[in-house]
Image (cartoon, rainbow, N blue to C red; front, side):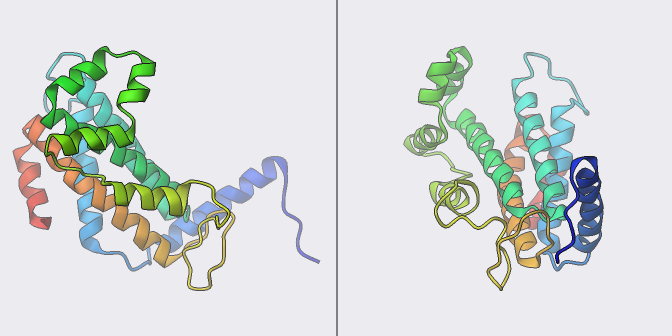
Length: 222
């Protein structure tokens, strides 16, 4: 007979115990060091920009707030990866991509940003959905940081429920997983996608905030 699964507070304690075990195992996975370097430097840059660490530029701090959201999402995604929750991390990584495209739009279409700031909720939902932001960038000949293929792949494979949904199935045995279970392939996929989206985005942040030293550091990886 299988052992009983704890309930109530004991179940939460059980989760904490499993998380500690997963985090210790993550340290031994084979992950591209280049990706980790990009993520670490990107997160440091996001934090410095969001908190006015070097200089406060005044104003409404709109950009700082957006970068702060990306920092929190990136930290949360990385933490989930170390705990074995890869699908959940990829969901957050997709959200980072949405903000990344919005930052790209702010470079190529100043009028769009003014419209976004002054619009009500209904207008924002209609005119500034992820797909419409991508279309606006393409119309301006700008750079899509999170393109449609990347966004759709994350949505279909890891986020949206489908008849074929198998949670956190990142193993060679094609076994779905309930809870956080360390899988090297899952960690590699999630880390690669986190580096893929934070790296180009942080170049924009460096340019906005004139972090020339961090920009030079990041150029080592591109």
